[in-house]
Image (cartoon, rainbow, N blue to C red; front, side, top):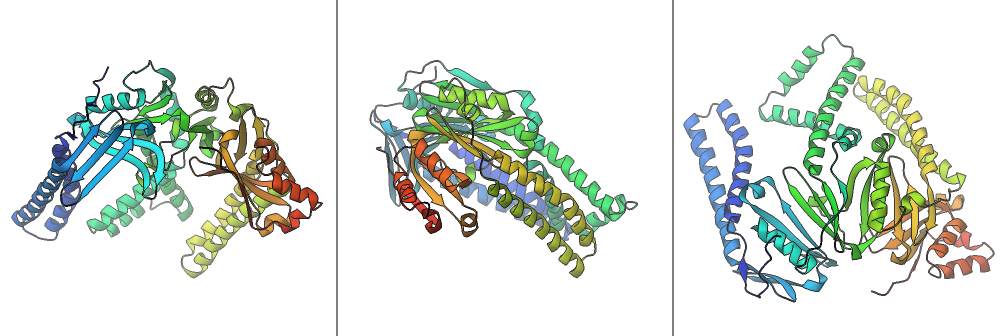
Amino acid sequence: MSEGPDTSGKWQRLDVRTLWLTALYLLGLVIAAGVPTALLLLEGGVAGWLVARTVGGSAFVIVSHGVIIDWVRWSYTEYRITEERVERRFTFLYRTHKSVPRDRVRNVDVNATIVHRLLGVASVRIGTGQQDIFGKVSITFDPLSRETAEGLRAELLHKGHEEPETELARFSWSWIRYAPVSITTPALGAAAFGLVMQLAEWFNVQVAVVDGIRYLFRELPLIPLLGAIAAIGLAIGVIASLGLWIELWWGYRLTRQSENLLVRRGLFTRRSLTLDERRLRGVEVVEPLGARLAGGARLDAVASGFTVSIDEQRNDPRTLLPVAPRALAHRVAAEILREPVAPTEAATLTPHPPSARHRRLLWAVSAAVAFALVLAVLGLLLVEALLHLAWISALLLVPAAVWIALDAYRALGHGITGEYLVARRGSVRRSTVAVRRDGVIGWVVTSSPMQRRVGLVTLTATVAANNGGYKVPDAGQTQALTFADAAVPDLIAPFLEMEQGAGGAAANSLTNESTYESRQPG
């Protein structure tokens, strides 16, 4: 059992090891920037003693001033935990005082980078699941000792009485097979080439690098050369994606403790993320194309109070299960929702009209042809090699676009099972979302001019969670409104009455966006 925090109401300071933490971070940044700078100066003929004094002096100034600034922050920052509130204040040239009621605390996330772990400290973010005009209502204590951080989490979430954890899922090495088939693989390969060229530019050797590549593949014609470069980039991307997956998901565990879901993961940066089940509105089973073809799926939470900052986009806190076997994702979803069978698996989905298929074919084929035409025009104006890329792109992309469009149409569907409404969509990123019907606070019905011509609408269930709504795209108008009324009775009834009273004429008067919303209590 970790030690509990001081709840006597006495003001306390953050851990003094924050000064070492700041010094180590700044030292790493200085080395990363200083070494290339020193090499460039030496290559430019600058004397070694002058480079050492300049770079070394700059490093000393940056690190020492950073530590002094952090000492001021540490000296004038205090926090306290009382029986009623969690508070933090900073009093120096100006005064800030942040306070949240303890009964509003919904998550306590404990994160520790490799530097935090070396020093035995952690960063604690206490969230309420609410937002104000400045963003998330949360308080961060960075750093606290590891023992204090864990004790604080236990005290605030469990009122000092930790119940045994129930394990829902655990790290498996077999899941790593899904890492190379993600979209990050080619992106990381391209980033590797970009990094090489950037370093070459720093050291003014771009021409030598390009000439070296040409010499290495001098016997290959243009098209095989491009293929070889792509294969090398893909191999680099595979290796990088495997490393990234291990860093993100090493030691992963999903457990339930009291009324909270707890996700622990990370190799160099350990993350401990909590989710209050009272905020849970449903789940989303996400199947990226590569993972889906390999039989994998990811599980995300649909919960109130989730907004993903720029810093969190790579480590989305909504993800409860990384890409794993599809059957496991559905099983974990059922356990999280406390249902015998996951709604995402049990629901019988209603297909959408054939006109939805035509729209997908039109957009997909048009995009593929447009891309090939752009390459052809650039080939005529700039480099002849782009002409070859144009016909190769057309030959490959048009059939792929047709397949993706048909696959996306087959995925379209919506239905109701028990207390959940279920919607599925997408091909490159297939999403099956199950949302509690009592969590829907409104409906948004939209219809573009092209949709109105073929009698389609996009229905959005407004939910106080994640992105604020989940779409049922390109459904028949009557089909969509009937589904909305069956899922949440009486919420969209006025529009149904209008349609029936007008004898179907309402379809012709549907504007670009019609909104019907009803706020639920609380």
